[in-house]
Length: 579
Image (cartoon, rainbow, N blue to C red):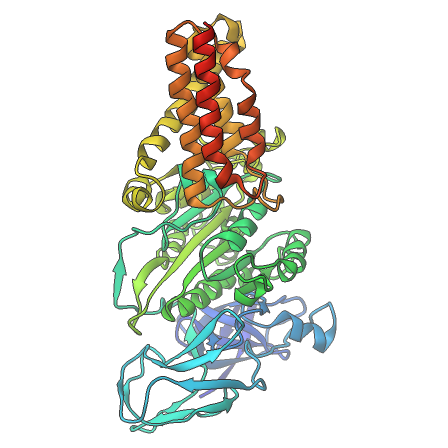
């Protein structure tokens, strides 16, 4: 039942009202224009509301209406290919209504209520069903079959279930207790969707990017952070992951990013081709756009909206990748609202509950057995934008305590045009050990050993560089000169990858394993050759090494690698015989 009150005080996006007596997190309509807001505090008979729209011109005395419902999203067919703002208002629909400049107080449903979907039931009359059960399917896009789920809190025996074309408002059947069944249901964004069992992280999310799959792998259902300053490649990395990772559904949340960056994403994503199907990538993508000039409260809601949509597809048995770009802007929104509420500030003015909110968000990731019995996962990859690239600031530090993978983007690498600009000395993954068995079975038996060797070489190179800068590399012993050369091959051939090259943008996991093995095989042969008196300059000037560097851009790279391995063996053997 709607209860009306009036505005008592306005402080930016925070409005205090009297006379509505709501529950926490109820949605309210503020002012004559009915701006959407959410209850975030109760103080006696006064209610504190964060408003999701600009509050300019709102004044005390204007009416406030309590809807009695919490902030929820519509879940059903039609989510894919959609572009929403932070509270699931479809931006293309709003643009049609009023042009490029969206007015206040305007709303639109998250799903198209007029579109008809061809529903094919998989359950039947008389079946006893519990929350989350699959009732039937709808072909949402060419690649994704949308499973129609019973709402998680509903259960009973099916009385009727009909096949045919329906809108999301049409009843498709009913339970014996009279509950109507529809293609759509609603779910509150701040409440995690329930599941049966959470599985351990034992399967990697294959990205096709060598430095990520090899050195710092991410598990399906895992959490990762990509911190980096301006121009280091956060957005390109996330777009590459969206395009090439083996997640079946992508939810991209542009949370408080600059308008020009978000425009690039909104125009680029619909044009991107899905390499797996040849169709548009948008066929399995949901975009949530909330730019930095939009109201801060909606920015805070956009992250919860994104993770709820991701959990919905997880419950259907899909592997979902959620890209949040960036959680720093979300934290800044929390800081602004917290200061308006006159709460005690924590470090650098962020609220004391910053770490708790970040934890709540990242902990909704996971690979689970859903209520439907299907196995699905939500993998969360959050970009962090520390001011001035300072990783010691609170958002980065609190994120690091929560996530298991840290892909540290480095401005110096980006300036040297080394992309992806992920610093192999400061990044880490806590999934290396648990995923080792999977890689040994599916990529290479000596995968873990080779990765450990490669990391040791790169770390030794970093230590030697200090000496090289003082006295030059020629003054080093020959074995250390060889280490520098092997590290160069690893950096320039293996770790560097061109996201815009048709072939090099994606590298199959078996090819990654073979490529690394060839480089380390050369290291083993070169060490033997050194022992017989062959010099480092002769070893590093063999022509086949440059061929190896160029071969990664060839479509038949996987076929070339065994030939290049034999050529390396032949040329090193010739040097040893000549010596």
